[in-house]
Length: 590
Image 1 (cartoon, helix red, strand yellow):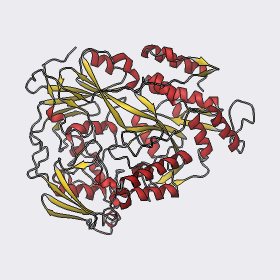
Image 2 (cartoon, rainbow, N blue to C red):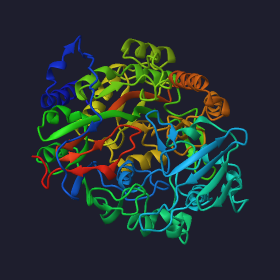
Image 3 (tube, one colour):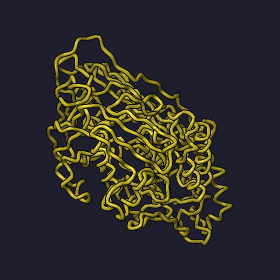
């Protein structure tokens, strides 16, 4: 068990390096809280300097472990792979600043509310990165693979089951998906059981990533994720294509001359994995042109002369979750265990009120994170409840909740026992990710100790990224509570993360009121924005009451860009991407 002296030492050591040691103080025996000013950044970097022809841009993939290297949105469940596919794969639909689908992409669409259909039209003469024709049959093929009985990924759920005929196809009682009709190479119609607002949301219920039938059809669905086609010779729709891969370490991309907007300006993009402990010195030395930077070390790089910092609100919420049940892999159903260690909502609420996230945001993250009042990030205006207060820091209330629920220190050892008088030892898991992550976790453990809870690290240490997610997915009994991040993507609909049948519902929390609210959110009535807003607010209020998760932070995403880079734009909804980026010199700014 980490004691307070150790935690204070860790904080002081880290803060001395961050330049924030003045925020750290002792008050009545407790680390005091403090508020941070939320930082603001530009989202676009332009330059009047003339560009050189072609060139190689070096991109640092900041990661604490290797990437898996599954280059397919249909199969990948790795955030690092998703970052890599930002160069080689692209949605057929464009979207605006409010994440609503527009008609400016590779495909246009028509929604028919009476027929509950969406008709999709592809532009003429689209091609995959290997030169093969891209047709609507490749959209159909993505649905066929995701809905296939042997599909091993986690995408299949309510959104896909909402397609007419998909349930029968998924269960093996039909050989085709009745609700999807291919009219010709560029026209396709999808019929839905119910229309819901996620159909018009980028990254939502209307699947936007085609799958190359010409490359994959001969491979059994159960084996595709392991195939060389997806790991070594992937084809995509993006501005660049994979040229060479060093598994888990680097990817060399080359310009895709078949890209629908025309061949990119750059010749190549070289992506290499770089640890958070070394990325600051690498950017200072000019060894990389672009990196998504760790916010915990912001003070050490914010004044570098050779880089420009861009920032945007991240489409994610950091949270603490509780293991409340298990998942039946065969049936795909989550089930509650009412006898689980964390089953009492009062215990979960007490753990929430014990945490001073204002302090953590101010001291460890320099205003680049803000305490989360709910699970929907504030970038989704109207859906994130501005009036919600969330779990504010209140250790007195936390202790009172535990007392009233019968969690008492009966033997005088400083730690509370269960209402049945049994020892209560809570195993907490978090991903290894640098000094700030370790310090924040140590601080949380100390705060829980202050209210009499015996919390220690599951496995005795922070856990490597892939292993952590494998443990969550398999309901490893070594984990009682965990810190993770819900990446909403561009659609904040919580069904994928919180439904009773979702594989990504790692808490395994199920609740009838939650079912009803998710059903409402996915029904035609929620096409009305006011109705949709009310449902989101009711859902977040339910999470506050039940506390299967504790929202902790909303985050700012920081891009460090070398000053030789031109036309870099991270604004959500931007119509210009990697294909327009250029370099203004052969050598990086140092």
